Image 1: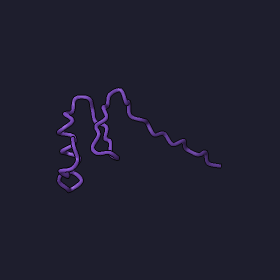
Image 2: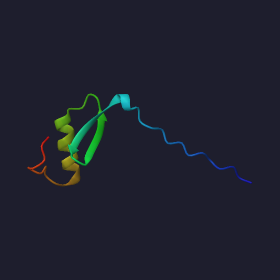
Image 3: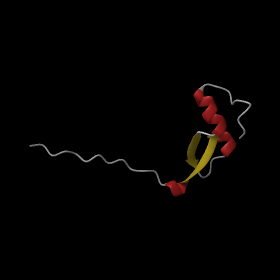
Image 4: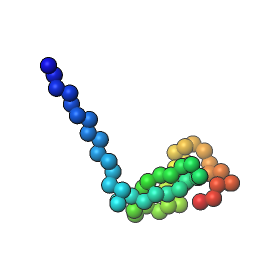
Length: 57
């Protein structure tokens, strides 16, 4: 009988990441050396929309 393989998902090291709040429901984690404003702009650019005016950075 074949043995089942264990699934191994390595978790990222959170001490090497910082949390950036995009809006009230969205948070992204980026490396410590990334500029928060640049990360927010890249997030909105990758979503294919412009940053809404009513969302404060």
